[in-house]
Length: 574
Image (cartoon, rainbow, N blue to C red; front, side, top):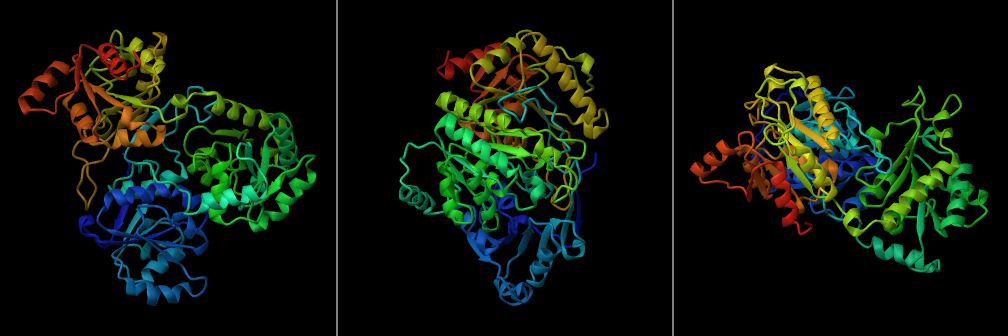
């Protein structure tokens, strides 16, 4: 199995690092997508001083974040001389380069930072002391997800584990080094004072506090290829005003002011044009007031999703699986032709990818998303709890290390239990060790096929699963020079932490269910209540836990159905 390659010229001990300089991406969207990596870097280096090297115009985005100790702004001119003098005097011990540019590597090299970590790209390999070569298998987990990205039109799918979101690329840099890279930041992204600034802007416009605000971002910094036509934005705005009584706010950078102005002029109704007129705090505050954002693939889209604002995102030449809005509650519209994705800034033919999205379809998506968000209960809107389940011995008959799809046999009552958990609002997520991949006894394709077969059998009996996460590593696998086992093999918490990150899990209301000691240890490490089922290795595991003095499960059940009954009763819903 291939893993990320580390080209190491000088080793260092992570526990001894006391000052870190992180080089931030330069674009708003990329900067927002880097926030999970920054939050997790703090988890790996809780005692270190973490400084962020950032362009001045992005500084306000990071000022309220607790996992950054200091912002270091790049000068507008003379970056290299400044790096060789003023930055060098700061005596940083380690630099983490999130952008892949040669220039950022040269800056930290001139600053004399002894340990320089980043992806090998743009010919900068010789400037790095730890160069990570990205590969499709460079992450510490494998996942089969059966939830569509389009949450309004769910349909089963197998997610390709070799296609990663841009946010995962930043996290992957940490994972390749065996650093913690799983949690989602919980701090508010609103820069200080932004809410008050937005309140003043809206009050000055005479808008009542109960006004439904719908934001629109018709621009895209990369070029016209990512833009839905302005006349369609104007038509959509008019329809939303007529049908919903909404007030439309147009957002854009100073370079996009002419674009927002053109949309306003084409409209029958009135819109409030903020194109080129907002600071980053003002934009954040206004977005947070919007019920929804209708948007192209832009940095503003990522800012809105990070603020918890639902997005209807229009994609054409770019791939939403890589740059779509993170989190739940969004709707992505994408009808890619054969030529998509492409790298053109301006479409050389007929812009068919964006022309395929007609006004009525887009407006219907906005209406459906708004109706869903306003009609659902608070229980359904917030993050969902999960039951994290071991596979063999808990859901499926214990069949030993050599497994094949034809050998899948769900334990009696398992499908009924999974159905009940889903009805009670729990995500059902399998977390399983599959070291047979590392031993060469099976391929990842075989593991995927095994999961598909198990899912088929469960569905035939009325059950369902939401996702399968598995670790393909050997129990003794480590990565020189850190020599630490992978973070995802149970009882390590990586699988559950990754699932919680991707599936928006409410961990405070979640459970672990399994038949092995490793499942109980996993739950204990995460502080989650556990249920030991007596199927599979359950009775043997219970004896071992008694002999070792724990950690004991919160409950012992005869099987998964019994575990489900206890969880439902304990949650107060039964």
